[in-house]
Every structure is written in C-alpha cells, then in structure tokens.
Length: 76
Image (cartoon, rainbow, N blue to C red):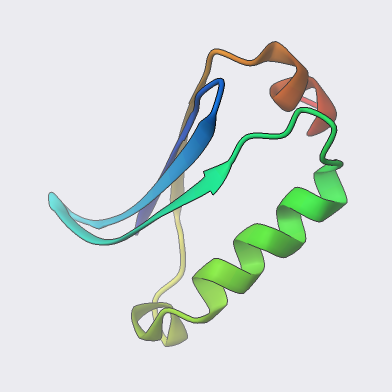
C-alpha cells in the first residue's frame, strides 16, 4: 500500500492507496509546532484503526509540503 501525505498551510491530507484505488483518507490540522513524535502517534492512531492494515503494510510513501517547518520537524 502507498501512503500519500499532502501538507498544506491549514490541513494535512493523508491518503492510503491499494494500487490505483484509494482505500482510506484522513484530514488533520497542520501545526508546524507539532513534534515528530506527536505526528507519529497521530498517524499510527489513524492508520491503526483501518482494517485493511491488519495484514497489509505500507510499503511506499509520497509526501509533498508547502510548510517547510513541518518537514524539518520530522528530521528529513
């Protein structure tokens, strides 16, 4: 599965794809003050509640961001 993340100034949108089909999506507020650990807990909570991820794992990731401070906090 592919996890896509679009970090905008107001919202961060996450999409989970199985091939070309989107199987889940989430929208959360963008907060450049959020730490990498807080972001990880948030994402794990959202994705952990999805039944398709019980057997499958995310094997790809695509991120785009207009908020440099958010990408900086994740150490990348």
